[in-house]
Image 1 (cartoon, rainbow, N blue to C red):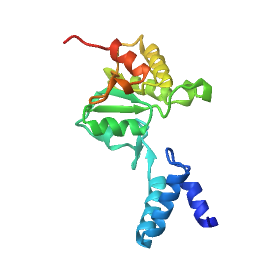
Image 2 (cartoon, rainbow, N blue to C red):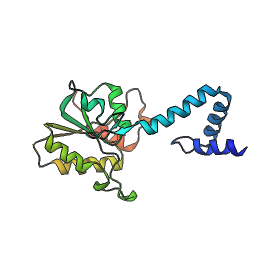
Image 3 (cartoon, rainbow, N blue to C red):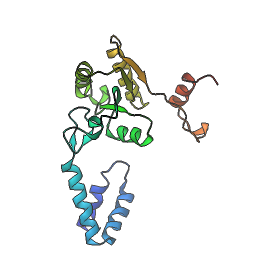
Image 4 (spheres, rainbow, N blue to C red):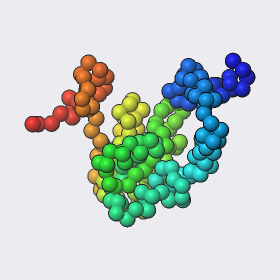
Length: 196
């Protein structure tokens, strides 16, 4: 492998979920493309890195000081969905199941990795709840050990307020087989079962 190709493969392999074989396939794919495509991709990646900011209100990614969701007066500004990261906002938005606003923590509590409440956007959440007319906080962290710990921490922190505090339900995905469901998901599915 030439040094130039090896450098490209090494960099591509740093992407999450991409191993060396996939990185090598991507590198060879790029070699086979015309210069215009590769240049457009390179410029797009630079624009992505340089053109995005963090919304000063919700801490989601934005091209402006305040993101389009926070600026949208048609959204329910009385409901705040607390999520771990920007991909979570994108997934909820894609589902079309929520029309309120968000607060992105930019991570989860993880003592093993040295991430405590001070490393997350929890202080900003509390300030926001004091200054805005929020009636409900929906905690939508992932159903991982760290996500559950973060959800419990937030629920305890907000317990003494007049806010309605809810947690999104977790369970078995539609169309899946019980054979492939992990223990935590199965446990939550039984815990949050409903009468039919």
